[in-house]
Image (cartoon, rainbow, N blue to C red; front, top):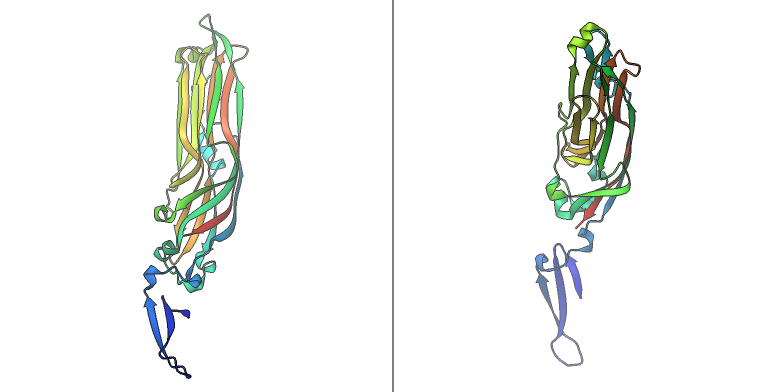
Length: 307
């Protein structure tokens, strides 16, 4: 006869002492240490599914990064207005893991959790939409035909649209973050090149302005990064402008002690832009831009994977 006692398994055997008409038995119990036995069925953790439904939906305001002032000294930087009208979105959800854990397991700390669970899997999807606008300028400058030839490119990793995918993080490798004041920072570049003599003469001239803006998210986990470039192969000097390995969708987890987690989902926009002006010509204003216009992201569920 076998039975469980605490963490040990006990086996009891009845020994018959003689073969007379009556029976006399002796009971002997053997105890086996718990470390050599399989776990009790009452102490096995089960996989837990937490429906988060954490969503973000944002649309860009297409604010110019440079405003050209004809005959007034070239372009005026307008990046701050873009930042003010294209704020990042931060969405969060509080999850108290104790509401989902089996209380008989006596899991009270993160170290306790790691004894019974090996990893978390986050299921998500997202959709990113970009827009491109290009108009080239052309005309004579110093009796020479001048023109812009703008074009833009983009590359998103792993893709601009992802459906029903997931990321798994081992609990031993999970990085918790505090909500920092610098979790999001402004990043931009702005410059212009002007043919001053022609502008002051107010007859013809050539100027180009180039800029980009994006919000930098300082978190350990990104589910999308991208590169955007803008080039001009047409004017007298030409230029390349790019920013790469930037992130548009990030997340992080904050531990508020005692397994009370705050899950943050963040998304940020960006824009790259160039403007060219050939003063005195018919087609004198050229421009090119590419920007992230819409971001939709959703954390569907989080799964605690048992050992």
